[in-house]
Image 1 (cartoon, rainbow, N blue to C red):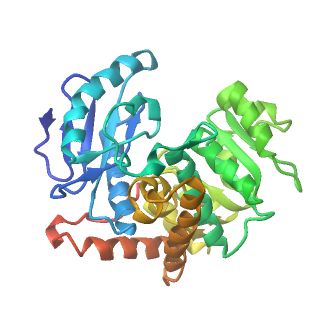
Image 2: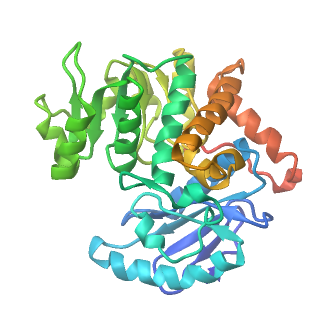
Length: 361
């Protein structure tokens, strides 16, 4: 692989395919982050995602650097691209200097046979109802964060989901199990907003997704609106779930939720976050709410659980404690999460080795 000599994160570009690995903390003996595949992925986005991983691992108090792998290819080239990727990445995973797993555009099956960060912990190998434990526990982590952000139960609380892929579906299952109500959902095909006083049953959403993919929006018996309509849906909690930088200052002005709890990495622009805070909306950190997958692999309390139910209970405790700590910060929960992460980074990185700020698009 060719190594970039430019300042900033260390970038290694693959030799046989279009893609790269970004290491956010160059001095880290081990770095971790997912592998994202998309035809329009650029290196700047991969660098931002690596920074989000650094902060995610730091809030969990793990001395591991953030990393991200970005692969670009057309859909018809996916199989060949992933086969080349597997050949090039295997040695790094064997050495233990890099940990990776599925992200946008990749699945658990794409990593079959490669060393994984959770192989020594039973949770990482489990699945429930055909859902991999990492995916399930990431969704569980988001919902644990939502409950803590609400200060209590999710029962009868209205939630809007941006995106309804595998992670949106995982979140929806967990929301329904805890009494939450999905009142708006968006995909690339549009946005569906439930009639006042009603909500979308999760079984209906999942069945429509199974049949129609993103087209599920047209099968819910309501007007199909533009995808952007999700930002202005009246709800208790908004869950951004798509690409970085989606919540800019213009969309932040339209948000009608009391709380924003993102599963998407780096969903806020700096200006968007400022607008939300000025409007009195609790904007929670993506690198906290989406940390369930990292916990499933790397947190001793969760990765060492005997089964997924025990891991769920541990997730509620750990995620709840982090969110409640963040909420105590006078500048809001995002600032509180940044303070926690940077406090830990100072324990193992010299000033010149630390990131120059949180993951804002």
